[in-house]
Amino acid sequence: MVGLRRAIQLRVWDRIAVSKLFFTWLAFASSKGCALPKNALKRVLLVNPNTCDNPYPVFPLGIAYVDAALKRAGVETRVVDLNLDGIEGVFRALKEYDPDWIALSLRNIDDVRISVREFFVNAIRDFIENLRSLSSAPVILGGSGFSVMPKEIYGYCRPDFGIAGEGEEALVNLIEGQCPASIAGLVYMDASGEIRANPVRAYFGFKTDVPFRDPRLFAHYLTDGGMANLQTQRGCPLHCCYCTYPVIEGRSYRKRDGKSIADEFESFKAMGARYVFIVDSVFNTSEAHVRGICEELVARGSPLPWGCFMRPKHLTRELVGLLKASGLKHVEFGSDSLCDAVLKSYRKDFTFEDIRRSSELMLDAGIDFCHFIIFGGPGETAETLSESFENSRQIHHGLFFPSIGMRVYPRTSLHRVSVSEGGSSDESELLKPSYYIAPGLTEAGLMGRISEFAHQSANWVDLEHSPAFDEISRRLRRKGVVGPLWNYLSVLRRLS
Image (cartoon, rainbow, N blue to C red; front, side):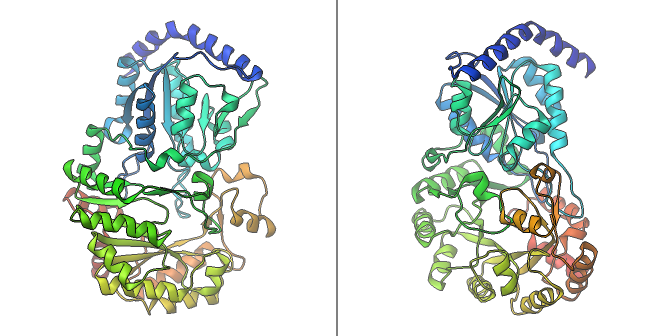
C-alpha cells in the first residue's frame, strides 16, 4: 500500500504546478468577478465515503442525480463508493482515472443517537487530507450533511469548494468555469482568506431529471440491502422545531409526476429490485400528489412493493385503499409524541387522535406501520411522558421506536428555544453532536422510564439501547430479507 501511495504521489507532482496556477487565477477571478476558463478540467471523480450499513446500506441517490447532471453537461465522470470499492478503490481511481476534480458527499454530520454520538466529520476531514497527499485535483464537498452547516464544515474540513443545497446546477457551473461569486450555494475562500457562502437557490430541474444509477453500484446495493430508493419531491414548508429539511431542500415543493415515478418503478424491476423505499421527508404532503403516483402504479399493475415516510394526517379509508392497491407495504410515521401538548411544542400540525386514526386505517388495510417517537424535546415533562405511554396502548400491532433528546441544529426553532433556556448561541458549537433535553429531565432518567415501559409493552422496540438488533438486522439482510425488519425484531424482542 505504501508503494501504491508513493507511485500515485509521483504521478501527480507534474500537475502541482498547474494546480497552483489554477488556484492563483481562481483567487484573482473571484476578487474581480471574472469567469473561469471554459471547457478546462472536466474529469470528475465522485466519491461516496458513507460506510454506514445498519439497518441496511443506502444507495447514494444524491450522487446519482449529480452524476446525471454532469453527464448531460458533457463532463466525464467516475463513481467510487467505499461500501463497494473500499479505500483501495479510491487509490486505484486516482492512479488510473487521474481526475481533474474530486467531489465528496457528506450524508450525515453524526449518527443522531445521544447514547453514541459518532461524529462523521472527522473522518471526512482526514479523508480530504489523504486525498491531497495523493492528488492535486481540487476537492469539492457537498451532500445533505454539509448543507446543514456549510460554513462551519468548510472551515473544519478545508475542501477547496463546498456546495450547500441541491448540487446538480451548482457543480456543473463550477466545473464549467462560472465565477464562484455567482454560483448559488457555493462555499469557497476568497482572495482575502474569508470563507464565503453564497445563498442557496431551489433547483426546479429536479421535477424532470432522471438520476444515473451506475449498474455496477446499483447491483451491489440490491444484493446487500435489497431495496431501491427514489425521491418523488423536494422541499418542505412544515415547521417541525428540530428539522433541517427546509434548510437542506428549501421550503418550496418541487414534485415529480406519477408517470415518471411509475417509469422508475418499472426500471427498478427490470434491474432486479424487489422492494422500493420512497425517501421523501414526508410522502403524503398532498392528496393530489399521492393519488397521481398511486393511480399510475395501479395502472402499471403495481410493479413492486414499496414503503415510505408519512405524517399521520389527512389519511382517509379510500386513500389508504388506493395506497394498498398501488403496492404500499409499510409506513414509517414521524409522529414524535403521543401527547397533544408536546406535539404542539414540537410544532406538529396533527394531534394524537390523528395518530390513532391513521394507525387504525393502516391496520385495517393490512399495511405494516411504525411510529418514531422523540422523548425529551421542548415541553416534555414526567407527566407528558406518562401520557404518551398510556396513549400508546390505544394503538394496536404497530411498533414504536423511541429515541431520547433532540439533536440541535442551527437555523431551527429548537436552537432558538435552547438559547432562550441558556444554551449557546454560537452556531459553530453545534457542529459536534449537541442535544436538547427539556428542563427537569435527564438522559438517564428518560432512558430508565422508556426501558421500563418497553419491557411491559411488546410493541415498543428499544433499539437505542439494544445493539444486538444491529447484528440481527445484518443476518436477515444476508438471508435475502427485503423491506422493513420491524416484525422480525418485534418477535425476537418478545422471545428475549
